[in-house]
Image (cartoon, rainbow, N blue to C red; front, side, top):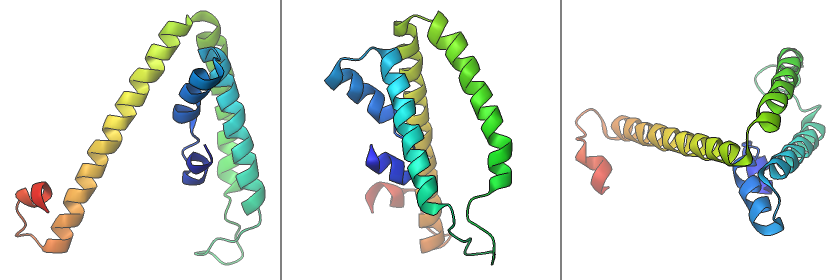
Length: 138
């Protein structure tokens, strides 16, 4: 989970199944614990970087507080609505199915994006004469 936090992905897709598997939590309990783990990691990362300066703009801190001021209320409101509507009304099996579908969908999107980026990088590195079979072999 620490590696997920360092990478900036939160780790919810990793720690929810692990908590369910090793500690025998229900899906709802695992999601609540995952949210708390992610929140604590975010607070720790913020405290570590709160006064770090932006390398591109002198005398400007790295954290964009205007963006945080806009995003925080919206995120909190969406979280509350999601908890009230989804976790209290949907059965655990449906929640788990939806989360698995979302994880598979996001994994496929990431793999496709990575494949496109690799293709573009190879094209830039080897020039316009590179053929498609370059991706297959080397």
